[in-house]
Structure formats: C-alpha cells, structure tokens
Length: 419
Image 1 (spheres, rainbow, N blue to C red):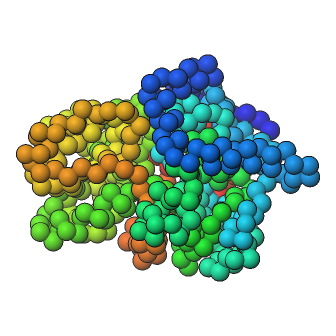
Image 2: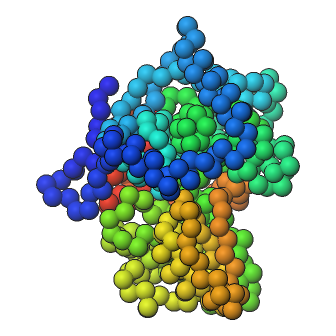
Image 3: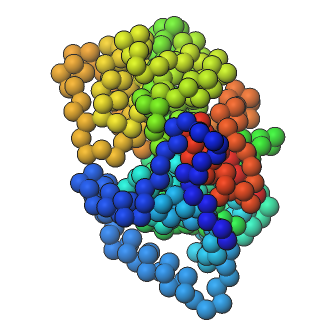
C-alpha cells in the first residue's frame, strides 16, 4: 500500500500549497496550551467509559481470526495510505454495520491530514458519508440490509434526555465528542474511509436516503451541510418575516493560505437563498471560493475590504479565529444574531459592551446533526439546495490517497470519494 504525501505538489508552481507538519512538529504542537486545553474537552466526564472503550477496541483488534478490511490512515508528515485494519462487527442488538458508498471531506479534514489540529495522528479518516446497510442487530427496526442511509458523524443513542430534546451532539450515553474520523479525540469509533463502518445505535442514528438523491451529493449531510443549516434555519425565517430585505453575511477564512476549507459557508449561503433571503454575501480570502460563490449567484466579498461588508441581521463566523469572530460581531446589526461555527481557541476577547448595547445574540456551539438531517434531506429531495455544486472533485476510493493529496491544494473546497 503506497503512501501519498498530502502536500504533494500537483503542478509546476501551484499557488498556496499548505505544508504538512513533520512528525516532531505535529507532536510538539500537541503540547501547546491551546492543544492541551482542547485535548481536555473530551475528558470532562465519563473518563472511565472512554478508557474502557479504548481497551475494548485494542483487545478486539488483537483477537485471533478477526476479519480485516482496508482503512485510510493519515500519519504525520502528510502521509496518507490504505492500511489493513480490523473490520468492525455488530456491537449489540441495536447496532448495524454499513458499507460507505460516498464519503466527503469535512472543512477540518485538510488541516487534520496536514497535522495542523489538536487531533493526534495517526488516525482513521472520514466522518461524512452515505452508506449501504450490510448487517443489523436483532433489535433494529427502522432500516434493513440493502437500505441506503446517511450516517451522522456524531454518535448518539436517541433515548437519553439530551437526545430526546434534540441535543444529539451532547448524547449522555457516550463520552463527550464521540464521533467518527477523529481518532483519539473522537473516541476511536473508526472512520468512514474504509470498507465497513459500525453504527452502535442504528435506529437512532441512520436516516434513509430519499429516493432520487445521489449518494455523492448527500455525502456531506452527515456533518458540514447540517452544520450550515443550523447556522441559518433557526434564525432566518423570523428575520425575514420582519424584513424581507434582511442581509445575511457569511464569513469564511480571512487569509488565502489556510489549512481549513470553506464548503460550509457556501452551503450556508445556498440554504439562506433556499429559505428566502435575497441579500446573501460570502467573504473568503481565497479566489477559488469567491469564484464558486459567484457561480452560485452569491455575492462574493474580499476580507481586506471589510469596511465595505454589509452590516447584517444574521451573520455567520466561520473564520475559526478570535480576530475573525470580533470582526464578524462588528458587522452584526443591532438586535441581530451571530453564529460561531467552531473554534478551539481558549479565549477570544469578545467586545461585550458593544454587543450588549447593540443587543447582539451570539451562539457558540457544536451542531446537533442527527436532529436536523431530515430537514436538510428534504431541501435536497425537493431541489431547493444542490450541495453537489460546491464539490470540486468526485473520484473513487481507489484514488483516495492521491485525491486527498490534491485536496490539500488551496483551490480545493469539497472532495467526494465513491465506493
């Protein structure tokens, strides 16, 4: 199995290739205060359960006669390769095993592949997928073998108080941040870039793919598309009811050389349009993202001209930086709402007094993907959003190492791998 450097140059002089961290640099970065702070978040509760799970995974992997499969592993230095790993099995009567049909890159995946996140490498990649059910436990009633389903990246039981309230990303049955494709940081649940994937709570987690919806188009529903939806849908209808000309400002990466990609801002813009917004702008430092926004009939704006950004009643901070959040808050209108997509920084220096005087509502938190998946899939099934228009490359699992190396080029936005 060959190894493919994720920062491989794809042309004579490609612009803005983000460099991979070497092994020593990656592990040294894991010891910085920011990384150590982020590493402690999954250990806020249920530490014993997380340790028990890790021991069980290690023992199962060593069991004689355990069947094996291929899984795509990312290692320090930007090395990507298929590797023979233990195949997942049914974990109980409520579980299922699925075969990934289409797997999409998340906006965080490039940074993870390059060793530029607090998630330790090596890890088994992939957490956005559409799959085919291959095996179900005896208690599973909602799906059958052969069904095509969308798999949320977060693990949730569907019956604890958090899940029953719709807060599936905060499921109390599993440890915090339990999710696919994040290695130790996600709890060793495996990755979607493999021949098979185990789903511990099939009835709670799996959502049937609507007829006529292409698996490759829906691959990102398991994370980024739903993340975009929760930034827009809970707030926009109320604002449009008060003012049909409501401005929506979505701010992606502020520089042109960033390891994070920007599919989520483009999905959010599509969703805002689908829900009736006429005035939608996307800011991003990369020309390729602004060009894609233009093709989607979305107003593209450049970061360096921030004084010309509109002051909007609904703003989305997808910058991933404290400086970016402060700038987006400054462009949030009085009585407006700002949603912060993500950040693992320890502090941000938020302008509290200005936000108080302007009555700005700031929402910071992770998405509850499983809860909104049916609404997102309905938008797709009715043709109101077309996520495939954001995809920059679709190719096969067999080409995954090379395709993901190309994805580490700054012109990439969304890569989908089909099996």
